[in-house]
Amino acid sequence: MSNAPQAASQTLAPATPFYKPQGNEVELFQHAFKHQLPMLIKGPTGCGKTRFINYMAAQLGRPVYTVACHDDLTAADLVGRHLIGENGTYWSDGPLTRAVREGAICYLDEVVEARKDTTVVLHPLTDDRRILPIERTGEILHAPPEFMLVVSYNPGYQNLLKGMKPSTRQRFVAARFDFPSSDLEQEVIIGETGIDTATAKRLVNLANSLRALKDHDLEEAASTRLLVYTATLILGGYDPVEACRAAMVEPLTDDDETTAALMEIVQIAF
Ligand code: ADP
View 1 (tube, helix red, strand yellow):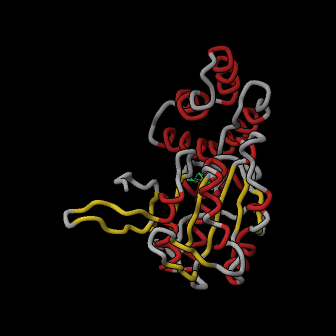
View 2: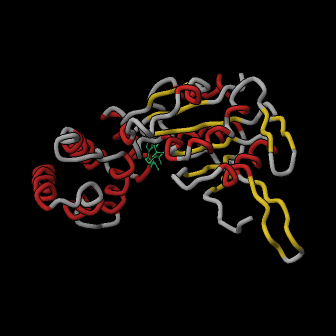
View 3: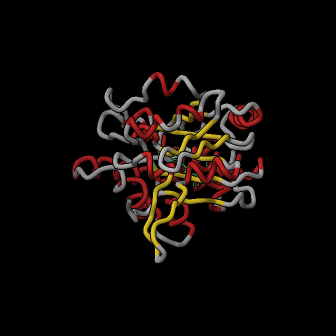
């Protein structure tokens, strides 16, 4: 028994958020939802996976339960646990259980971070049984047609030990995301922040130059999210070069030499 907080947040199908599709992912998601198939989304961090799921949830009129997975995440964090209250112990549903009961979308972000035994609770939900057995209470929940499980991971973070088990990944239809094409990324930045086209274009070109350095000096490439942050700072009146430092350089490296090299590229761009 524990009072540990659950790392989940729920969004009640809000007004449709802004989302620019990269390819046929909207259609694929609609089909997967209709046919009750779970979905796996692969792609680097900050490339729009979470935004896409919130967009689809709003389109389909379903709430979303989002769980940021980490290596301490237990099956109980997903399914639920007994808690101690003023009147003794009571059962508290975890986000996965709530999503199943309500016919919501359950989104497990960075699922490979979760312990292997955690992902095992997903198995009976991801085949045609679509059930969630709750061991501690003896309940067996049957997922309604509106329930959908979506998981994501960043293949770049993976090491051999952390890859998803084939027996788990073979239960999902999968879509691959990447950073959007330059034109699309420009539209995303403009759509998100309202920045002018010329600055958006510069930021995307700069990001592409920085991305070319990935694997050489940087573990991670500048994400669309960081571009949105940079544009937000610039639009708020912050100096563009300093905005790039704060939102596109410092988040990516701690190394002094690499920082200096990246700032040279920034200075050429602005
Ligand atoms: P991920 O879940 O892949 O780490 P997010 O979905 O949180 O990334 O995206 C990060 C940010 O980038 C979003 O908050 C949004 O501002 C922006 N973004 C990225 N791709 C898109 C897109 N295709 N349409 C609209 N916004 C996007």
